Image 1 (cartoon, rainbow, N blue to C red):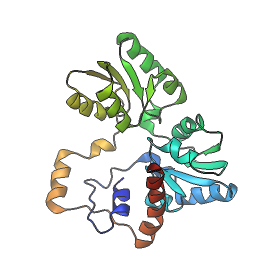
Image 2 (cartoon, one colour):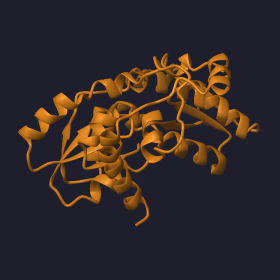
Image 3 (cartoon, rainbow, N blue to C red):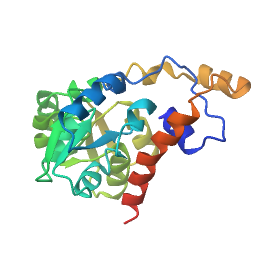
Image 4 (cartoon, helix red, strand yellow):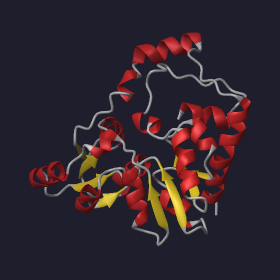
Length: 239
């Protein structure tokens, strides 16, 4: 995400408080492997999730977020789509289109590890709670949920819903924000933790603000190539 910020704002300083705080799922989609898949499916368009490296984006036709993945794919006239890198998000998109989704064998371990049994147990304990899960969850978890939303979608739903209780199937950190913004409502987490996100601590953030380091750096070539699929995504969202 820090790379994406720089791609869209190449004239600005973009800082990541800990360069070791990477996304394991993004690392599963390397440019070399993507090139091989593209050679195997020459008529397919490549849709890459924003949680990919700048190099992978540079090979893509268009990017997507978890919120607009379905809209982005359906906007493409091609019958075959290489969807990189999250297999569960790709399976979710497949539910809404007749296009062939060529799934990449990648995953977000945080959402993959949320189990249907956890959701069902929480529903027994909190029968009046709405179940909101992320589309990166496994299909059986999605089927057990009341609603499937991106994190932004969960924030919106929690605010607008008449329900007073919610079971949240995504990284546990979102529950802090939900509780803060909706103090009259209750949120129950699946206790799903991203160890990479937790590397960004308050102390590291303060140090980065003081030093303006470490900075994200990309070549002009990658920035130019990766910007195009991101801008295509943004244009689709404005239709």
